[in-house]
Image (cartoon, rainbow, N blue to C red; front, top):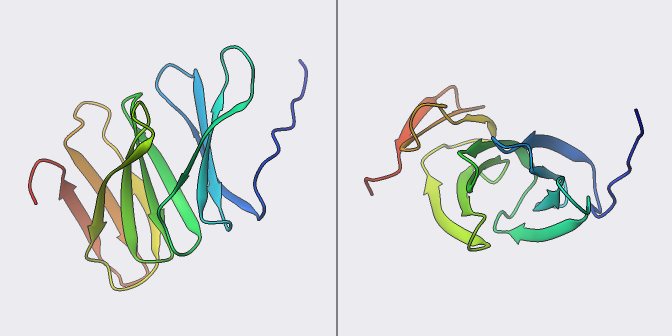
Length: 127
């Protein structure tokens, strides 16, 4: 087994996760950005996503083409990886978001918990 070091973040990395096919790895953290890494061919950084104004604490893949992030800025971002951009930002927590989760059987829901003591379920189809 060999080791690889993926470099690109300018602060601590707080969250990582592979997409469903394990061809992409997402990393995020204190530098407020998400880096997407190609894990199939080149093991290189292929996309940088920025939309949060504070540290990104949690992330999850919603199928292989969307990435959901939760941040200390009290927002959740849903990124379309294929398009390389933010598709939706969710606001409702009143404190730091500690964790986001995406169900495996549906792409329409996102769950989040925060330091405000709230568990929120977000339906992506509704506004």
